[in-house]
Structure formats: structure tokens, C-alpha cells
Amino acid sequence: MKNIVIRLGFVFLILFGINCNAQKNSQKAFDEKRNEVYIDSMMNNALEKGFFPGAQIIVGSKDAVFISKNYGFHDYSKKQPVKSDDVYDLASMSKVLGATLVTMRLVGDKKIKLEEKVGDVVSMYKNTAIADLTLFELLTHTSGLKASITFYQSMLSTPDGSPLLSNEKSDVYAESFDNMYVNKNIIYDPKYLSFEPKDNYVQVYKNMWLNPEFYKTVYDRIATANTNTRGKYVYSDLNLMLVQQMIETKTGKKLDQLAKEIYTELGISKIGYNPLKWTSKENVMPTEIDNFFRKDTIQGYVHDESAAILGGVSGNAGLFANAESISVICQMLLNNGKYHGKQILKAKVVAAFTESPLVKEGIYRGLGFDKRKPDEFYKENDFGHTGFTGTFFFLNPDDNRFLIILTNRVNPTRTNRLMYKDDFSAKIWKQINK
Image (cartoon, one colour):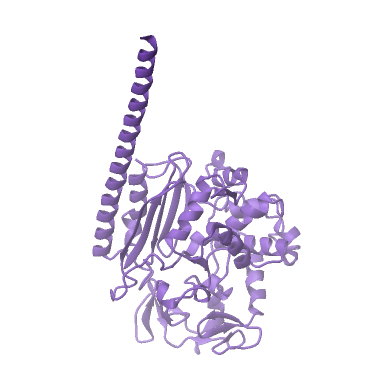
């Protein structure tokens, strides 16, 4: 009799456990359906109001993808619906999904140290004002360098010396650029820019090639871009451009090669620099109608002008990808650097780069990764990054969640900032982390 009671007890516990798991799975399915309904509502509202022409969204965990959807079209002509294989210009998301990932690999392999200084690694900076800046300072944006430099504008001029841009529209300043107007008589410096291929010139757009001698100007200006705010947080594209130079000097390989090695190990192919080398133009989202520098609708070439003059491969921008490829990187990061049983990045490196090492100084920033002061949208251990073109990805390691939102909100113009005014991406992030 006693054995029967014990056996019945075991059966009860098993059935109880099965029932509990069934309830948990049912609740989980309900939550994901609720999230999907919320995202559909947010997306339909965004498309109706013209936040962007289209988008890809993925919600997942370290083990699975729960929601993967495409919305809208490539542009406002509404001729091409968004497909899963389409790739977006990631803009500043490149800082972490390119240069930072590579740095994490090199740090884990002890091929570079966070304490190493720019001048000790890259000889051209040895006797400059930025020689003592460390890799750590560059990655945390505490180097004191200015936010950006419009390098390309030094190659443009006008016959009469009038300004390139004006706040007022007129016959001379007829076409818009951001919130200004472009001089219709702009001249390109023939010393540096060519509209036909030349030996050793670097292609910066489909019909534009750059004399590599211009790079001396670029590096000289970076070397004198110190604003004497070292130790303070100032987000700067220049930081990641220097990170690129450091890792390329250390390895003897270019950034795009180093990044591709990691992507290949992860088994992802819809991600990389200069997308027309690995996908068709029809699969690349158009970005801005550039009336200023390239005089064209940018498609298949990087939107960011600094990355463009570097041939499309830069530490600050240049990556293109679809949401599916990025989701694999997210799962790897949530799995402490491991993906499908393979250790892609060292676990301790992932932990170090995604925490906030300077939070005691009031700086909410990881190494490369964006962190936010906890508020109604973001939690303490969340990390990710955004991009100027309208891209977003964030991860919550505590609740095992990630969200990817890819848009081309700069099409047809960067003046469209509706998605930011509405906290669009942050609201969705908050919803899936309830």
C-alpha cells in the first residue's frame, strides 16, 4: 500500500510539473502574441504617419526567434515590398557590429590590450596630441575628441567663394540638404576627386573616386581634434575611426576582412561592408537623396560621408545587414559569446564590453556598446546601439531578450525625425521587456 501511495505521488508530481510547464508555455505564447499585436499596431501607425517607408523587426532570445516580420516598402513609391533578404545601411550600429566585435575578438586572443595607446600602435600619431589616448577611452567615448569632422566638405568649393550651404532658399540655394540649402554652383576639387577611375584611387561612390593622398588631411585633422574634455563622455565618430586604425595596424588586415571572419564563423552572409560586392542593388534599401556631395539617391553605397571617403569601410559606419543576420549576433552575445556550441568571443570579454565600467562617474556606456541610464524604457544591464539611418538593436541579458528594428527613415531626407520624437523604438523595447 505504501509503495502504491509513493507511486501515485510521483505520478501526481509528474502531472503537476507537466501542467505547470504547459501553463508557462501557454503564457509565453500569449505574451509573444500580445507583443506581435503591439508591434503591428506601432508599425502600421508609423507607416501611416511617414516615419519611414518600411522596416524589418525581429524579437528573440538566446535560444529562439519569436517574431520576425517585414513591413512596408523600400521607398515611398511603394513598388518593392520589404523582404527578409533585403539589407539596410546600419550607420552607427556598425560601431559595435563591426569594429567593436573585431576588437572583442582581438582582446580575447590577447592580440591587443585596452590599455594600449594610439601613438604606440599607429606610428603616424606618435608625436601628436592624441598619442596617449587609450583603446579603452576610444571605445567608451571618453577620449575628448570632437563629435565629428565633415572631411568631404574641404574638397568642395564655389567659383565666387560663396558658402556651400545657406539657411535661406533662393535661386542659387535651391536644393535642400538636411535643414539647409545647397549652392548650385559647387565645384569638386580635381586634385582629390575624379569622376572616372584612376590608378590607386579609392571608389567612394558609383561615379566618384578619391585620391588617397587626401587621407593625410583626414588623419592630420583627427590628430588635432582634441577638445580638452578627456575623461568626459562625448560621443564621437572619430573614436571608432581610430579603433579601426589600431586593429588594422595590429593585425595587418583590413576591418572588413576581420569582420567577415567572424560573420563566416557565425554562418551569416547578409551582412558586410560595400553590399554591392555580395548582394544586388535591388536588395539594398535606398537612403537619402543627397543633393550636396553625391548628387544622387544613395543606394548600395554607405550614407555616412566619412565612411564613404574611406571606401565604404570605416569604424564609425559602413555595415549593411538584414535583421536575421544581426539576430545571430544577438544570440551569440546573450549566450556569453557562444553560438551553436562554438565559442566565438570569450565570455569574460563579452561581460566586460557590455557592462558600464564608468557608471560611478555618471557615464552610462559600455565598451563600444550603448548603455542607458535606467528609466521607463531601459534597464540597468541593457546594451545595444542605434544608427542615424533609423536602425536600432538592444539586448536584455537579465530577461533574455533582444529587439532589432531596421528602417531607412532618412529616405528621402534626413530631416525626417518623426520616429525619434515619438520614442518609437524605445516604446517597442519597453513592451517586449514587460
